[in-house]
Length: 311
Image 1 (tube, helix red, strand yellow):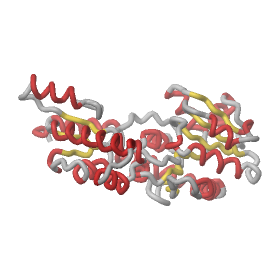
Image 2 (cartoon, helix red, strand yellow):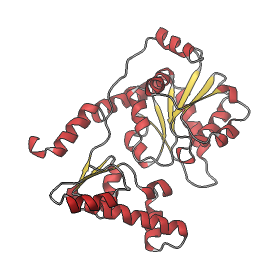
Image 3 (tube, helix red, strand yellow):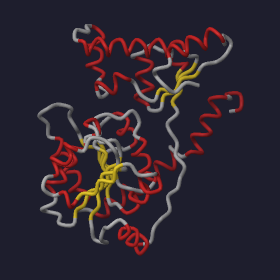
């Protein structure tokens, strides 16, 4: 069972030395997806006529991934868009592909208002602070700079608004966008899972304005922790969050001149000003997690995949 898209040489050797074995690949990402932020139209143009050095590298990477997929006997896709891409773009027969999303162990524990305030105090926040939380790599693809710009424009209107940024990466552009309100922002760097979940438990809104996500595991964690979410309209995230059902999906553009900060700003305002709506989205997000993404369901799907005769 392979989990890396860099496994072609290994796959060739496995086929040679273990010809009777079954080889499985889980597609967690695609290199073109990372480089092109999931833009299929752009990929198709590049594959037809790769002109630049970058385009040639993307084409080469795509062909390597395609050969790997065709070497494998069965493939697991972790999201619906991946499932469709494997069949349509990589031309893998549909009967070889199975959709099995990630699963997560449910560690959510409801907090009383008193316990929540105690935990907020532990991290230096007040009971009446309005906490936004982002978690993930600090990278342009994650849209954190747009979030920082939106947050900066909202702080004058919402005096108790605070932002938690949990993750590692290049903070420079984020700090520039947050000038001069750094005191309202907490940048944690890397934190362990228990600390991250505590931060989720004291926050009011989770925000993941990514321009591309293959799946969106952090969003799943926030859903499990019963957080109302605002996410970018990228493929993976938009499969987890349905617009105005269990959160808000904002339209973000991957180009120099864009309206991304304003889009995020409006979404934040709509939830800050409507607590019943926040609670409704939080409840719906957790319900979707419980019905579709628990570790028990994932385990059953994997066992059925490995042992179809046991279904």
